[in-house]
Image (cartoon, rainbow, N blue to C red):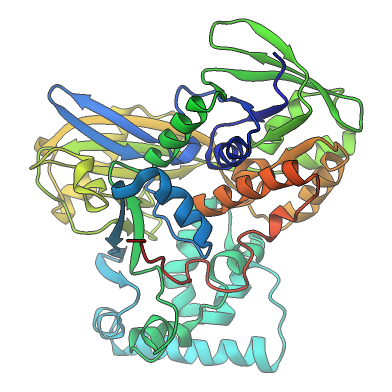
Amino acid sequence: MEPEILILGAGPAGLACAMELSRKGKKSLIVERDDQVGGLAKTLTMREGEHVFLTDIGPHRFFSKNQYLYDFIEDMLREEWRQVPRLTRQFIDGKFYDYPVKAAQVFKNIGLWKSMRIGFDYAWARLCYGLFKKKMTTFEDYVVANFGRTLAEFSMINYTEKIWGIPARTIHPDWARQRISGLNLISVLKNALGLGGEKSKGAPKSLVDTFFYPQFGTGRIYQEIQRHLNKAGNTIATNSEPLAVRHDGNKITEVDVRFADGNVRTLKPSKVVESVPITRFLDLLDPPPPKEVLAAANGLKWRAQVYLFLTLDKDQVTKDNWIYFPNKDIPFGRTSEMKNFSKDMCPEGKTSFFIEFFAFETDPVWHMTKEQLTDLVMPYFEKWGFFTRKDVRQAYLMKRSCVYPVYDMDYDKRLQVVRQWLDKLDNLIYLGRPGRFRYTNQDHSLEMGIVASRMILEGRKYDLDAIGSESEYFEKGPIYEKRI
């Protein structure tokens, strides 16, 4: 039987779309290259004899302004859907800094002179970008204008360059507008002093302090969606992938899919929803897009990640959910301790440590073995008193390409060329972080999937890029109160 709706990619966006369609009686065939659903939000299981360790591929805390999403998840997870206090710190020049910022702690750590320098630089930046109307044409401009040069270089510019692997002066200001719009030195100080933000009367409670997280990892959301879809008669084909997507210039006519058993079937869906990397999708098209479209796509860059997951014979390393490491002389960018998201993520009396490296696939770290990476990181953790090599039970290595779409100075022009051509295919919807080449969190990907289902059911178009484009701090919003 031919599937009416074919969904390529079983990440948050694709699964949410399938789930909403299923609730309305529409069945889908979901094709996933991996052996497990969830995309970058899956949870992995590491079994070591009688002990079981769970880890996300980079922990995903959940926050959203959309009440429907909370209800969507709670309806599936029930008591597994739990509220967690957040503790996040930055480790800069050998010292820890709490986030949200604590003014007294910052002044104590950096000293009077540097504190005065921060104030002076901020005042100068406001003159340059405010009174004298200097244009903010890059990410560097944006953060300097809102925080001053000293504070911008202290933790934002260096960490951003660590993530993207390119200078801040070559990063598009869209990255700042999307992630830190509404934040500046004054708003940070007001929040630190209790004069604004989450502590002001009647203001929404900021999700920087608390978030929701499933008892057994973020992947539980997608495992439950998979269970519901299978029960309703939908098909999720894992270890399967599209080989060719044929079209007539106006719509997709056929899709060749290789399934887990090695057989290739030619499908003729009426609708195709794709959430695989947009650049890979273009390579599948037959006939190929015009040369100018392919040239634009070839200019779109992705940042990959390498993950080292260590299981430890230790009760706890720190109380942090995450620790960020902006200094460039430290090879990794972020660590997380899964036990601090949920105690059920590891055995009693033991813990784990998840270490993230940002890389291009041409970088040396991308080609390192788990033994080489362990040798690379251990001197840092031993020096800081986190844990010793004797505490390490096992090391696990994971790699993911196409994790972060790179917002260089020309990405938007290139992306516009690609999208204008793809939009000519009337029965195609492309969505999610990889599908739209847009850095979104899982809540926005879920919302995109839900909106995509309505596009199919209602036969109309919605602006998927409007999702998550609020002109304010990305993590600000009213916290969801769990239903009783």
